[in-house]
Amino acid sequence: MNKSLTVLSSGEYPTMSSLEMVDYINADRKSKAEAEGLAFPCKKYRKLEHRSFMKKVPRVLGDAAANFFATDTYINGTGGVVERDICNFPKREACLMAMSYSYELQAQVYDHMTELEGGKDINHLDFSGLTDMAISEMQNRVAAAEKFSFEMHGQAGSALMTRRKKEKKAIKEAEQLVKDLIQFRLCDMGDFPDGKPA
Image (cartoon, rainbow, N blue to C red; front, side, top):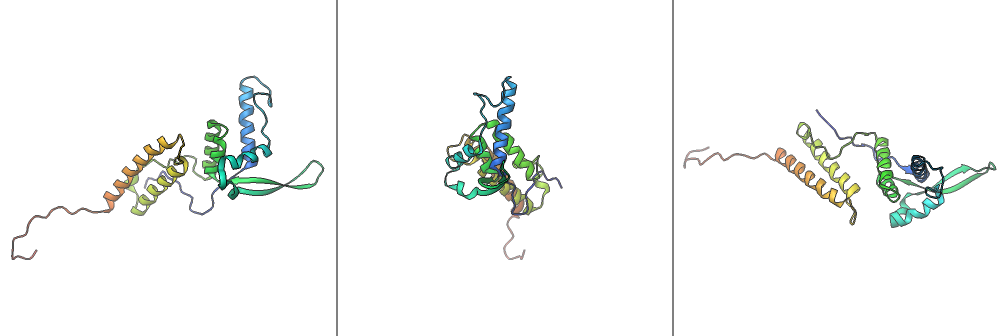
């Protein structure tokens, strides 16, 4: 049986902390600065501070930001234990935060989160081999593709809505294929002569 879709079976999904996000952003800025022969940090590529990133979270995520706040403890320079506010983002929100800085960064974060999910080579919209699966697997595959497309590209006003429309068309075709396979059609058996049992 050919499967190309990996689905997490547990309710646990990987998260990316705001501290990791800041590291990703600073690493991205550092590589861009070095590519241009500049030192990092510099006027063009400033070092992002965690507190500045945290101020941006509610602006990007709106009311949903409160769902991702957490507390982290660390040891400061004098050896004292200090608590700080952080965020733990699931894949979608991590990508939204990264996109607010750059599309290249969003792609890096998306790849990182996909790798954490255990499916580096996941293609949710690859329906090849669909007919080789059991009926329940086919239905789950199409449902997972719809969920992925909606969560990643279904935000109103997003430039990704064009992509969502194309994905929706492919998903509809896969749904129809599944329906055709599970709903048997009986061919016309013709008219039976009157008076004789069939």
